[in-house]
Amino acid sequence: MVQGIVNWNTGETQEWLQQYVDDWVSFYRKHTNDGSVASYIPILQEADPNDLGITIIGKNGVSVRSGDTHRPFTLQSISKAITFIVACMERGVSYMLNRVDVEPTGEAFNSIMHLEMKPVKKPLNPFNNAGAITVTSSLPGETSAERLEPVFQLLERMLGYRPRLNVDVYESERDSSTRNRAIGYYLLEMDFLESDLDVTLETYFKQCSIDVTIDDLARLGMVLANDGMDPKTGGEIIPRQVARIAKVLMLTCGMYDASGKFATYVGIPAKSGVSGGILAAVPPRVRDETMPFTDGCGIGVYGPALGEKGNSIAGIRLLRHIATQWDLSIF
Ligand code: DON
Image 1 (cartoon, rainbow, N blue to C red):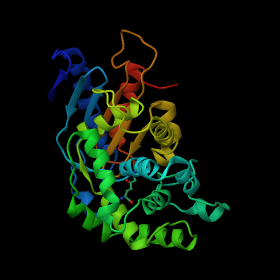
Image 2 (spheres, protein in one colour):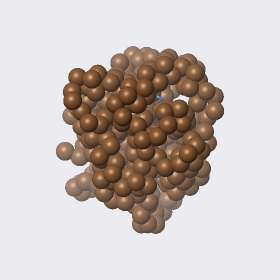
Image 3 (cartoon, rainbow, N blue to C red):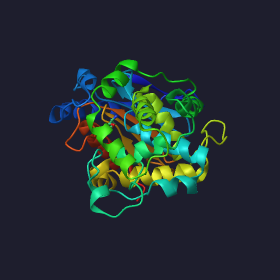
C-alpha cells in the first residue's frame, strides 16, 4: 500500500502522514461497493470499481500518494475547468462571462431543463454539459486539433509533459453521444454556439478523453491553489483572476447538484468527472503547525465507482475525512 512520500525541497520523509493516508484509503476502499462505474459511455464500464487512490502535493514540496496511484483515466468533466480557463485566456474573461453565466443549476450535469424553464440568455455555468459545449464552441480554431492545441499547451505547462488523447475513449464517447448531440442541437437553436456544432462536439468529446493520473490532477490543483502560479518557480501559468473564477465555479458547480453538500462537508474547490477523478485545490489557510499542508495543496483522487450524482463515491468520502482531520475547509 505505501507508495512513498517525498519532500522535493529536502528529500525528508514523513512516514506518519503516509501511514494515516494509507489507513484511510484502505478504509474507504470498502465504500467503493456503494457506487457503480459509469455505463452510459460504454468503455468506462471497463474500470475496476474497487480502485481508489489519492495524491496530495503541497506547496512546500511534500507529496503523499496512496492506493491506486498509477491508473491512467480520462479527464471527462474535469476538462471543463481547463477549457474554461483556456477560453478565458484566449478570448478574455468579460467575453466569456457574456457567453456563459456563473450560477449553479441544481440539476444533473447533462440536464438542460433550466435552459427551457428560465428565460436565460446563456447557459448557467461552464461546468454542466450545456455550458461546457458552449465554452468549447468559443475556442479559437477551425479543427478540433487547432482548438485543443492551447488546452494541451496549458496542461503541458502545468504537468511538465504533454498528456495524450485516449482514442478508444473518444470513439466510445462519440459513438454513444445521443444526449450531448441533443444538448448541442438545443444550444444551436438557442443561438448560444459560436462555431460549427460538429467540430464543437468533436472537440468536446476529445477534451473529455485526455488521459491523466492522480499525480497530474494534484499538480493542476496545486497551481490553482496557488492562484495560477507555478509553486516551484513562482511564474504565472494562469492569470490570477481566471484561476480565482475557476475556483469559485469549482466550489459552486464543480460537483453538480452535490456541490452544496460537498461545500458543507468538505469545503474545498473541486471538480469531478464520470471516469472517477476529482481535482481539488486547497488554498493556504490560517497557520496551525499541527496541521499538514497549511501552505495549500493540490489533491487528485481516482475512484471510478460513482454515487447517484455522478461523482466518485469513495473519493468524496475520503476527501471529507481528510478535510475534517486536517481542517482543509476554506470556510
Ligand atoms: O459529456 C459527458 O457526459 C462526459 N464526457 C463528461 C460528463 C462528466 O464527467 C460528468 N461528471 N461527473
